[in-house]
Length: 177
Image 1 (cartoon, rainbow, N blue to C red):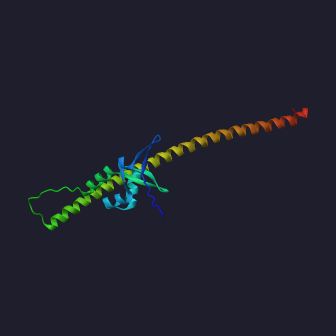
Image 2 (image 1 turned 90 degrees about the vertical axis):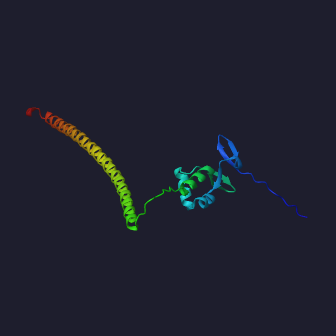
Image 3 (image 1 turned 60 degrees about the vertical axis):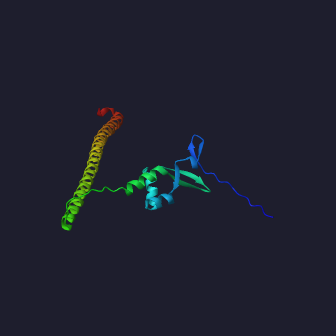
């Protein structure tokens, strides 16, 4: 007769400073698969949001791996944001062409803004690079001046050493001096 053995599994989340909290008491109740299904996005998007801090989550030990568990409130808020739509009642009718023109204008306006922001970022990057180039140029100029001074000093020492050797050699023949 075989006995049926049942195991009771209780999941805990490590809270730091040696404290553990039961998962059932934790705000981190939703795993990546559930979050993906609730929000209608890919697993990669969920991981990116966790890494960027847009979603609050913790890695918890499960079996032989670590598993991301996500704050239930964050998922609820993200879902509400995704589902929220502003509805405006319009009393006048608009033609299809006027609607298309307004949409094109809105997209162009948004594109202009994105282009402007991108240009500002590029200009800032160019300014930073130009400053770095100027700093490096100044450093090179300072180093060149330093090396030229060192070369002058070495030449003086070399000439002095040569003159000292000539005098020493000529001292062997006192009649010339």
